[in-house]
Length: 108
Length: 114
Image 1: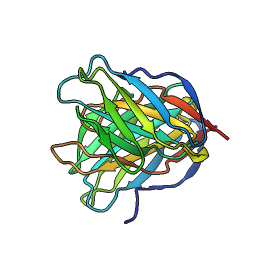
Image 2: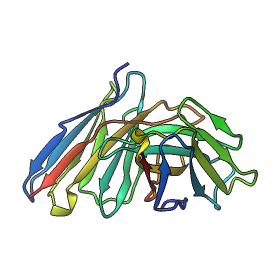
Image 3: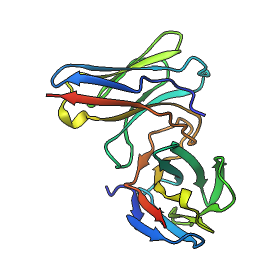
């Protein structure tokens, strides 16, 4: 079973920041938080991951709370192509337990 | 570099038949994982292979099996197909480092059982 909880859906205006929350209250000390997204029936695409520090790459930023029980994925300037299902995963080796994810719809 | 390649992309089989799906990982990646995605159950982990050995296994019946070859290419087999096996089957490859790295997914094989 997935160890994360995400809202089922969110909307975001094009050009604005999209903030996607994730709860992982039972996370263990050595478990990483990973984010993937899946655009209609394609394979999931890696976005970012982190352990306890905030992380940023060319796609997004990941903010992890100090107690590590929740995190937020930030897409700084959402575009229509960011419309997808976003999965937050607490990773136990290569057995990734996907939840239902958040369906993000970016609107013009 | 080339991504993860899955073949075939689409497949139609009849109940009771068996099917073999193929996955070629990114060059240098030695870990290959398989997932099943259905509208009702979402993405579910099937199994992971590393160095030709199954390292992890999800909660699927024995009809689902896999193997990995010395060049890291992997196949999964489903025997005695059921209608409920209709799904998108995805494989992912990754570097087997101590600190987990990202897994890269293929485009999947869409299997339809009729």
